[in-house]
Every structure is written in C-alpha cells, then in structure tokens.
Amino acid sequence: MISNLQSATVLVTGGAGFIGSNLCEALLKLGAKVRCMDNLSTGFMHNIEPFINEKNFQFIQADIRDLEACQKACHQVDYVLHQAALGSVPRSIKDPITTNAVNVDGFLNMLVAARDQNVKRFVYAASSSTYGDSVKLPKKEDEIGAPLSPYAITKYVNELYATIFKNSYDLDTVGLRYFNVFGRKQDPNGGYAAVIPKFVIQLINHESPIINGDGSYSRDFTYIENVIQMNFLALTTDNTQALNQIYNTAVGDRTTLVQLVHNLKKYLSKFDPTIANVQVIHGPERLGDIPHSQASVEKAIKLLKYKPTHKFDSGLKNAVEWYWEQFKN
Image (cartoon, rainbow, N blue to C red; front, top):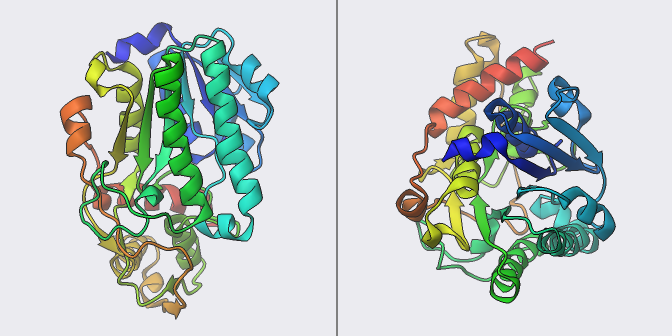
C-alpha cells in the first residue's frame, strides 16, 4: 500500500519540526509530493534544508491558528499528517492559554480546512499524556484516566474533535498516541527539550544530567523509524475497520530514567571514555508527570499490521551516533 503515496500530495503540518521533518524526508524518498507547513516557532529551517529545493517539496511558513492559511495549505492535498502542536507538559502548565490556542484552536482549523478541501484522510499526532492518572500497564487505547496537565487536555480534545468530524462530516481520521519519541533531528536545546537529546548533549559536554525524582519513573521510549512506519500505515491502509481509530505508537517496552542514563553513558563512552565518570544529579519530581508509561501495541499490530523495527536499545544507539556526529565539537 505504500505505493499509494508515490502519486499523492501530502501536507505535513509542523513539517520543520523533529517528527515532521523526518516524515517529509521519508515521503520524498517514496516519490510523494510534500507540502510542509510550519510557523518555525519550534521547528527549524535546518531540518528541511537538505530537500528545500527538491521539485516535489514546498514549504509554507504559516500558523495553524490562521484558518485561511490552513485552507490554502490543504488545497488540492490528498492526505494530511498533522504534527503541528505545542508540546511539553511543563510548557502547558506555565502557559495554558497558548497551548490551548495552538493545540485545540489550531487543530480545529486544520480539521475544518481538511473537510472543506476534501482531504481523503487526516492522520494526527495524539499523545500518551491522554492516559493521565491511569495506573494500568500496559496502556490500552480504550482505558484512560483523568488528565494531569493542560497539554494532556488539549490532546484528548483533539481525539474528541476527530470523532465528531467523522460522525458529522465523514472525514476519515486516525490518531496516533505517541510515546516519548526520540531520534535524529530532535532538538536538544531550549527549556522544554525532550529528555534523551537533552541528556545526550549534557553528557557530551561533561555536564551532569538532572533526573527529576529518584529515576524510577519509566517510559516507553519510541524510535523515530517506528513512528514513521505508523504514520505511513495509517495513511495507506485499505482496512476500513482501521480508520477512525486511536492507536498507541510505541514499542511496548519500559525503561527507567536511571537505565536510560546508564545506556547513554555506555554508548557515548565508545567515543569518549571519560563520559562514564559524569555524575547524575537528582532534582524534584515534575508537576504533571506520569510515573510509568508502557503501551500495548496489539491494536496497531492487528488492524494496521504494525511491526516495530527498532527496540529502545537499537534506536538509542542510532540516536547517540547521530548526536555525536552533530554536536561532538
């Protein structure tokens, strides 16, 4: 079914961001025409620089909070991969208004534009934060708890809106609940950087990583290649039962923060043995953090034929090598 994309026009919102730029690159390799929309608030031109001049690539600098811009971006598009959002639980706690404006108002703008422009399918980035205070492991799509942050609320609202747009306007959607995605092009800088790139750069610079809490919190860290696969499966599946569903996008494993730092030191020490001696600092637990996160991916395997290609360990090795090449100097 991937061959369907060779003649398709795909809009990737947030296309200059970490996940979005990887999706753009993979789509171009398949021969698809790619339209990348990004306001560059958290995305970067250097992420799309390698293919900015390709004939099948178009960059639109615009904001999803602008409905007219969304309508123009969706014009004559076959599929939408909606990645644009303001991520980060701490950011949403600090500034819930902007988080809601981007993640809810912007999401609704994109749904309306996709409906009005007759987009065939709308695949969007949902979030594992939707599981909230549920302590059940592994996380199954139909068992969620109460949200623990404004960010979690916004991502759950996305799912509700997607369902309504199918029921009211017959717009096919697929939501992918991402679980701690990591890999090449993920920004290590800034106050809301994800834990893996942040720790990698700190260790490369011989700075002590700060673990929030005692390090026993665990995550289902998911390498970018698995996320690309899930997006493509959601775009191209011809299984009607697989549409208008929510899927965990993960591996199904669980790694503690202490284990994460241990593995990062091990892989980075191959390049610089002194990194093994860098000490770890423990700080207070973060407000809104979920203690443990591990996904069940059985639904994705059954309905989308998902086959994760990278476990945490192999993905981490690849990520560490990429960051070392980029930031060793």
